[in-house]
Structure formats: C-alpha cells, structure tokens
Length: 414
Ligand code: SF4
Image 1 (cartoon, helix red, strand yellow):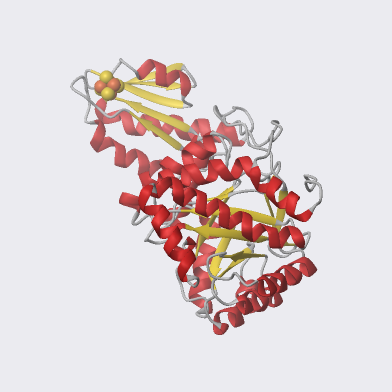
Image 2 (cartoon, rainbow, N blue to C red):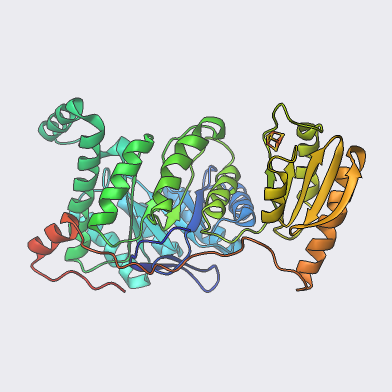
C-alpha cells in the first residue's frame, strides 16, 4: 500500500452537504464533473445524484454563463454532496458561485490572469472558507495574449516538447501561486493536467517536490473509456503508487458515472479506498482450461451484483493457480475435469459437477456474506492505508522562489 506524501489539508463542504478533506490524513477523494448544462437544474441534479450514488466524494460543475451560476442555489438545495464551480475566463462567475454557496472554486491560470481579479476571488473565498484549485492544463498553458512570450514558448517547445511543457506548467503555477502567497491564502489544491500521461507523470512529480499543497490528479481529454482508461490509469496509478495525489478525476467522453466506477476501482486496487462491492478474480483461460469459464463469467458477475458485502470471489480454470487463489479469496472455485472444487477462506467445502458450479458457488457466497453481516466472519484484504507518515522532505524551488520574493518564512503545514 502506498505511503502518502504529506501535504496541507483543506476541507470542502458544509453541514448540509457534508465535509470532504483533501490532503493531510484524508483518504484520496474521488471526483467527477457533470456533462449537463448547469442551468438545466433537473438534468444537473439528476447527474450529480447519480455520481453521488456511484461513490463520488465531490462533483464539479461548469459555470460558463451567468444563468449557470444563477442555477447553483437551487441545485445545492437538491443535492447532498459538496460541489465545485469550474471557472474559466470570467472571474465574475467565481464570485457569483461563491455567493450561491458553492464549496470550492477551480481557477485556470491560463485564462484568469489579472491579479486584481484573482485577488477578488481570493478575498471572497477567504470570507467563506472556500478553497481554490489552481488548475493548469497543457491546452491552456501557452501564452495567448503576449505575442513575444507566445513565440518564445512555442519555439522552446519545438526542441523538447514534453520536458519544456512540464517546465512551463510548473513555472506558470509558481507565478500564479505568488498571488495567493502575497494574500496569505493557502487553502489551495494544485493540478497540472495533460492528455499525455508522460507529461502528467513528470509535472506532478515536479510539483510534489516543490509545494506542500494537496494535488488533484487527472489526465485530461482522455477520450472514451475504451481508449482513455489505460491513458488515465497508467499516469494516475503510477503517481498514487508513489504516494502522490490527494484527489482524482478520471475524465471520459462518456457518462461520467464511468469515471467514478473506474476511479473507485483504481483506488481500491491500490489499497487507498475501502472496497464496497464484491471483487471478482478470474483466470484468463488457456490450453489447460477444463470448464467453459468465459461463458460462466458473465453470470458470476451478474449474480455478484446482488451480494451486499465486498467478498473476494475467485474463479479459476484449472489446478495450476486455483489452490493459490483459493487461499487468498473469500470464496473460490477451481475446475478440473468438468468439476469444480469450492473453497471458503481456504477451506475446501465441496466438489460439484460443472453444471452445479454456479448454484453451489453462490450458495456459499450468500452464506459467507450473511456471516460477515452478522459479524461471524471477517473479509480478507480490507485494510486501507490513509495515514501519511512520511515527512515531506526538502521542498524545491517553488516555495523557495515565492519565499524569496515575499521575504517571509515557508508557511507552516496545517
Ligand atoms: S488457471 Fe489454469 S486454465 Fe486458467 S489460465 Fe491458469 S493455467 Fe490456464
């Protein structure tokens, strides 16, 4: 299980919607973003509630227009999960969202740069204890207004695109964070997303060395789940396994509920989140297979969906790995010569013919799940490591640079 990097802790939410910690000793928070027009209150509430039901800790909504921020008050009345307003270009949307009772603001340094405007948002957030995510995205990071700077940045990118892009993202974050440090505002979360997992890995590794702010991880514009899944999981999984990352969003061009389903699975397999649904382990089958395992699998999945306890069930095609998996699972079956040998927590309980495997397996699963519910049996693999015992170590140039300019000491971790 990963040892988490130590960061500051921020709190998002209120009594009505619950509080979610990000960073510090809080578990990694899972979030997604609605794909509805926020001004369409019914559709947005429906999607937020579906995401909440699926396991989201936080939900972000886009507020490009005044009619979107105008809808927030009513949306907040109808949901029970903290909400984040995603603000681009117009700082006024942030002020309106704060007024409506939003729990967190996301600002993009690429399109809200003007210091007085950022300071207005900071002041409004401070007044209501609202944290701000500073989210630098690869797509919006290159200078668009200053032509000279833009040409310089583009020329640098031609020589070493990925390395330079990481440098530019980190520099822009540092530059932006000076405004926050000058205003003594530290309720901040950082992100530096890209469509390229290698840039994501490099950027977050760099930022985690320079700042002690909690980090929001994501691979942006990853595409549909079929192609975006690997792209997202390779970057987020590698960072989380190193203890980097305090909240995540997997982004798909699809129903956002898929983002939560896959994000949950990622956190669960890394031991960063307690599993709440049954876990299925199955062999990929090979020339030694002795039952029709692939056909059996969909039925096993369907029946597992009705089990209210996160039992670990293994279905193996032969004796090669069967006994080993039987040891590590709550309920397991391995096949041999059109028969199935069934185990419960490592103890052999039955040998049945192939046509009886499913029914007998689920008889055992149900009995075992009932025992867990009554407190008569304990599930395997239910430990979750959420404590960050490691000191953060030396911080790099990020805080150093800001400190030098500000002439103050490094802000104390809370
Ligand atoms: S468990 Fe047996 S059938 Fe399944 S992949 Fe392994 S060796 Fe092949």
